[in-house]
Image (cartoon, rainbow, N blue to C red; front, side):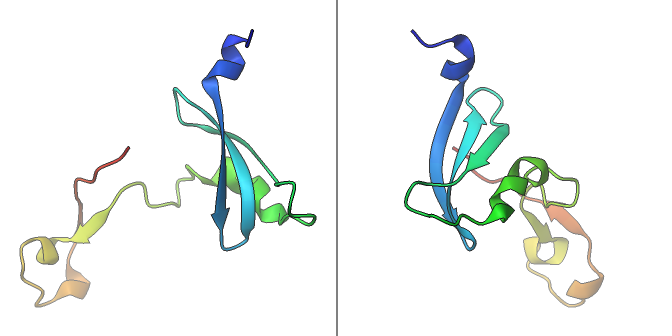
Length: 91
């Protein structure tokens, strides 16, 4: 029988520009708990180990944004416009 902790954890294989790796997440909070290499990659990139710390870092964009002028279909001085959030679908 699995413990409640292991039932909350989900391991997913994924890939990025630095290689293929596994990501372990908490199924309830969606927090990234750990990352690891895959058996078929004898030299996994060490970059993937930083994922748990940076995935919710304050420097990351937290949701889709669009220029207010784009939202209103007017782009006359887009470099001076502010940004607003937009709705997006998540699974």
